Length: 419
Image 1 (cartoon, rainbow, N blue to C red):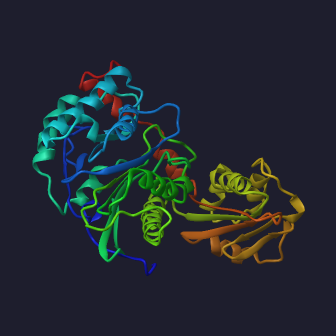
Image 2: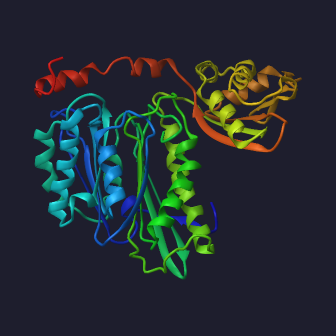
Image 3: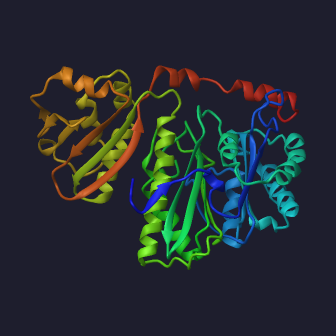
């Protein structure tokens, strides 16, 4: 833990003047009583920044929130789980805008000041008949201390909620950063389905905030992969309301460096928690690449290894199969020389100069039998480096993702589909 910041409790409501509430709307199934809608609101004006999926098929809430972040000062985030509102056409956009409009009216804000996010099954219309009546309940229940409820309401296939908050000193004032995230499957770099909401009571200009968010996402959510699938709904949104009373944080200053370090930590912890909670995964694997011809080449190698189904299956089987790793290095399209490649597994040399190292296979097996280990790949060409966080691929993952038929059954009962 850095001396710059320390962990505190509260999640997204840890920073001053942030309120939240979560309710059960039965979005996916009206017969199941679980939190599935949440709202985060700043009591004072905000500056907002965000990044979104680069998938060319984007969900309605992503399109709406991108527009709102460009056009206004977003100060509220509405989120639902159970339905992604993706591939739902004009009606999906109308539903997302209506939710923002209604919530905005209820909290005394403009529609453009409300971001909307959704996660769940793709291709089904939103069950607005159950969602709309709960919007007033969300706004009426807004309070401090409900950060954990928001984190739980975002969950889909997650097995646990994910939240964090830290405090740091900026110009003599205590500033807090809080966050919550969800994601366990359909996770791949470039906004690897994942959502993350961050709040802070620091005072920051929009230009500076965009820079902080972009840099933090690059070293966190763009560095994780579980199954190599990129979602239609990935969103990271940060709200900064300046309620701490600190002076404005300007880029290039010491305060900016401290804030960036703390924000990077918050987002990295959230990103790593997604991988650890991956759908039926058993391993958390850090893949480090160095000695590449360039940063981009190091990235190509790391992503090739981290996304290889063969490599991930061997990790699941406690098999230190460096042959599968080096073959992924070879097809990564990076500049490599086979005779220079070194591969270490859990700190032990498995491959040196492209050949088998003199190491006990039993020792290597013990390394990959653990629930967390590191793969270090040195291309020995130049100084390019890159790190990515990945997982194994289990038979249980395949079984878990074989069918989403139950979603369509409920949607048919709701009259939302004829399938």
